[in-house]
Image (tube, rainbow, N blue to C red; front, top):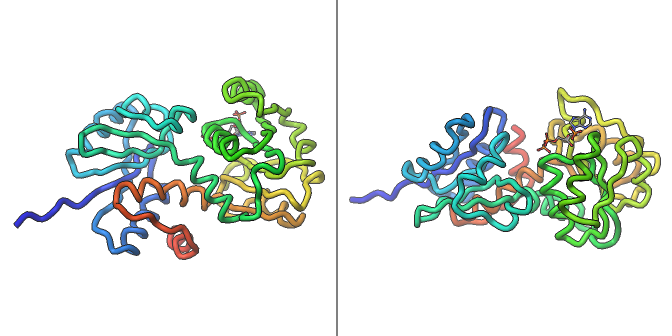
Length: 277
Ligand code: ATR
């Protein structure tokens, strides 16, 4: 009797031990009673192409890609989604039955779904967003915010030319603000997003005066270690609705899981607990 192959997925990065993705996908597999598995894969840059091209032959139906391979993987895939092209990076691979490798970027989707779940009253069109940072995460978030109809993005980065480069690339909806004056941009903000690593355990703190921050501004952080960053704590103390960064990670995994295993998974408190354990 022929036993069908077990569909496999995984997360490719270097290092990979810290990734929460295996816990999340394994939780979903168990919760929906699906046959399948999801493994961490520590892969060096020199082996990336080799590994990805061999995975379909080993029963893999897809993979997530994380630091430092999100850009390099674009050269290896056969098809790129419009979103991946726009962001310039991919985090989700689908190994198609015809042997082709499709690459997508779901980070912006994860960011926006998390924001909508955590701050359902937030209306993209009703005011500017202040974005701190101009790295890879900021690119995905800026694309998602522009797509959602945010009228203006006030972008502050320690290295100002990197913010200017994003403005040249993504257009005049972005206004570059000096890093040391980012606090003054908060006054009219409808949303404040930290996309830098500041505030993460082991990193310097984010030094930003919130004196001009209004209680009606929604504040979110992509840092989720700690879950309640000092930025979120200080903003909450001023009366702001705050949305932590763990949800972005959880939501970005949804489209991949659905494509690989055929079930759209839920992001809820039970999942958060399972991932935090
Ligand atoms: P990611 O892909 O997670 O966005 P990244 O591309 O390395 O990572 O970007 C990190 C971001 O955090 C950048 O905006 C970086 O600012 P610079 O462009 O000036 O490097 C910001 N960042 C990191 N450490 C910082 C610090 N000590 N002070 C201010 N910004 C910092």
